[in-house]
Length: 139
Image (cartoon, rainbow, N blue to C red; front, side, top):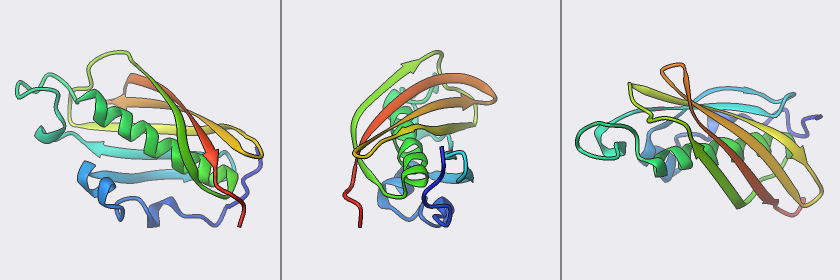
């Protein structure tokens, strides 16, 4: 896949949006040519499923997947869009200190794009996701 917007810098945007700040998302890396983005998230008590610290809440993991997928698509398509479908398979509890999502745009069409995402906790695969986006009109 040829990147349309290799000048787009995810690092300049992640963390500025209020929702990114609320979750504590941070930029890890991007590869514009491959349409890949990596975002991270430090686990904190507010994101845990219960007070027992038995794992990150699934909603926080889904949010990490959705945001990482959006930026992978944004890199590959050269424009953003809206999430129209999001699926998440949780493989094990996400415990430890940090989560990291690796998202890759796998298909960019004229009106829609698709991304696959893997989430790791302390180096172990904990969730996989797929997101489909309705792309914004070309400007």
